[in-house]
Length: 171
Image 1 (cartoon, rainbow, N blue to C red):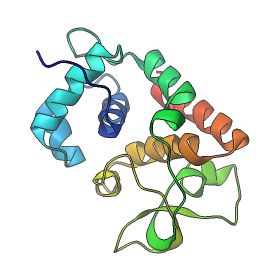
Image 2 (cartoon, rainbow, N blue to C red):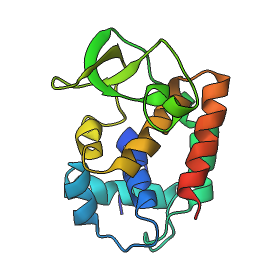
Image 3 (tube, helix red, strand yellow):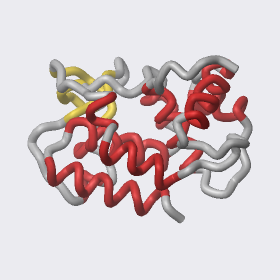
C-alpha cells in the first residue's frame, strides 16, 4: 500500500459525492465517471480518506461526522480559497443555493467557466471538474457551494453553511 502523503482537494469532492448518495451503493468507477476524475485518482483518494479516518476500513462507509468536523475546523486552513478577478462562471458559496436564500450580498462569487451566465469574482473550485459535475447533480452542487462558503465566507456565512451541510449529510 502507498504511503499516505496527505489529503488532496479532490478527496473532499469525492467524499461529498459519496455523502450525497446516502444509503445507495456506489462503485469507484461510477464516482470517477460522474465527477470526471480518473478511476486511478478515485482509488488513491479512497485509500487516503480511509487512512485519514474519513472512510471506514473497508472503504464502503463514509464517516460523516469526521468529514463534517474536518470541513468545519480544518478545510479553510488546508484548502483556502482566494477571491479573484471578475469572470463569467457558475455561482458558488453564498451566491448559490441554498445560502443565497438566507444571505443577500452584492458580492457574487463564481467558479470560472467559459459558458457561465453569471459574472462575479472567481474562486477556484476544489477540482477543475467541479462545475461540470454539478451540472447534473443539484445536491452535489449545493454541498460544494456550501463548502466554498466555509472556505471564503465570513463568520455568519460559515456558521450557516456548516448548519446546512449538517442537514444535507447526516440522515
